[in-house]
Image 1: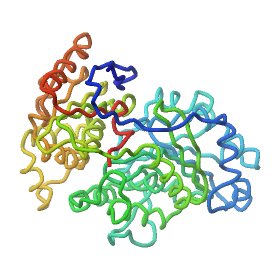
Image 2 (image 1 turned 60 degrees about the vertical axis):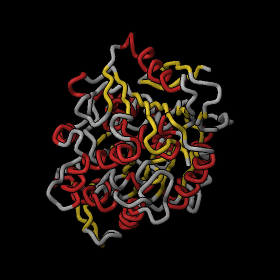
Image 3 (image 1 turned 90 degrees about the horizontal axis):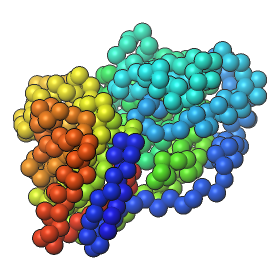
Image 4 (image 1 turned 45 degrees about the vertical axis):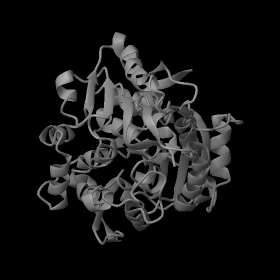
Length: 431
């Protein structure tokens, strides 16, 4: 049978045996318009007064709307203008509104990306600020300590706001359990030092720092404690379906509304593994998630519960922007095919660099299947660069991509081995 997989902004078709396990999310068709979903959600929130009532109580100061960056496929242009119009209708002025992009440790958004995400009218009429975790002038110490006992610094626009609105995508997350909610604040608006703790070796070395796990997950506990130190006044949780279209909007108190969104997502995007298989074939989520190899790691870590020890993984991502940040690229080059040395260095404090956490998660796949069995196909990274990324590298020209992946699948299928496929990549999770 042929299965369509996400690759960049396109789909590619690959043939797998009819006996293959197919992991797909099960979101039903949206029954209301996006406008109806938004207004219904903010008017009938979970665990709080309506947004209209909350705005009447707002303190003096700016209204800060926290949004995700380009790595999350939230179609803000479909609902952000209406949300802002609603806020203006409650007496706010344009100049009081700031859109704060929760970049975490990601790069700032380009002007073109801002237009793509929010629409030209929003970009031209409202102040948009990208969080910078390394700019001390943009940070402010928050009273209290995190769950781990650390000092907390957050973006000052958020801390000093008269009214705070969080928005975020709720989906499975390979280390924090689920995205969205408290993650918009940490790591989204946190300082480098705070993120270092959140993504540090000790947290990520714990088994509960995993997909779909919130109980005893140190990342969830740390982020939640930080969010409580400087809570939002209102949260808007976005759920996307398998086509990356808005399926549900769940608003209200930041923790209760996120919990409800998590339950909604869990029922629709988690599939039970019947039996681990010999080969997993997985997309890395398509655009924008597979724009860098850094983000593609989520695809082959997500599928681990479904593959046998020393089994094989075939993963692929467009990598239109290449490997990732300068720091991440240097980590991958320095420790190429030397994962144990890397783990030893970060464990004993001999090394720390931004984005190291992604390689630590990557190593989970290496430990289970080995470098030779972790195949990665891309048209966006050169053969030389791909060979240093601790995968079995396949740098392929666009016209040969499908045939090359198909050939690797056929090598396993011809021996009658069991295969599982993840057309949506990390957006559907095996448990």
